Every structure is written in structure tokens, then in C-alpha cells.
Image (tube, rainbow, N blue to C red; front, top):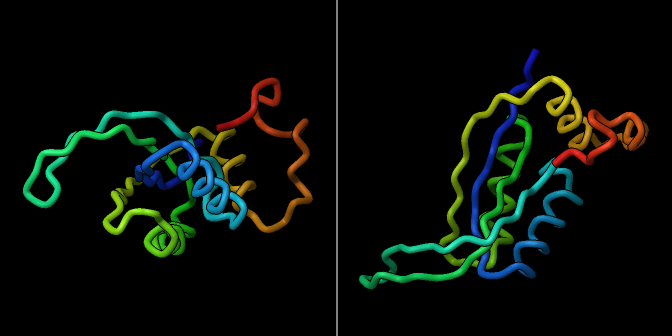
Length: 123
């Protein structure tokens, strides 16, 4: 059994901005989890080829929260023209149930001992 989720990709200029964005999305229950990874980006900007160190964010959310997440990213992102890509994903049953629970506004079922794979945090 699997669960439908959405993955959203974006980048931020540095670790501090990426962490702040991730925390806002998780606190607002727009994201169940955000993975942050340092990356080297190469792209054309205003006619020039640019290279920069950035932080890639992989944001996990539900299809029901996707539009609100995308609107929020447009509003709060530090870039004028942020990379915002979204993809449909299928999650395993345990991770999918955890992700949907994390997006729920009800904290009553968030006992860490009841999380799938509780010996390791989900993410």
C-alpha cells in the first residue's frame, strides 16, 4: 500500500536561509519534512552564465497542501525568481502515514514512539 505525496524542489542562497524557510513550512504544516543539501548550481541569469553554491530543499507535502505550499513559497522565498518545481510521488505506507500525520493540525497522534521506524526519525 502506498500514499500519494508531492515533492517540491527549491534552492536558497545559504544554509541559514534554507533552514529558516524549512522551519516556516514545517511550522505552518505545509511540509511534513524538508531535506536540505548543499549543491553547486550553474545557470544563465541576465545573459551571463552564473555558478553559485546554494542549498537544495526537497519539500515533502500532500497533494491537498500543494497549492498552499506553492503560494507560500512564492510569497516568502528570498529570491525574486525562485526555482519552484513540483512532482507527484508515491511513498511507502509507513512513511506516507507519518507524512500525512505530520501535516495534520491535530498533535494528538504525534507520539515519537508510534512513528514508523521510531528507532530512526522519519525524514
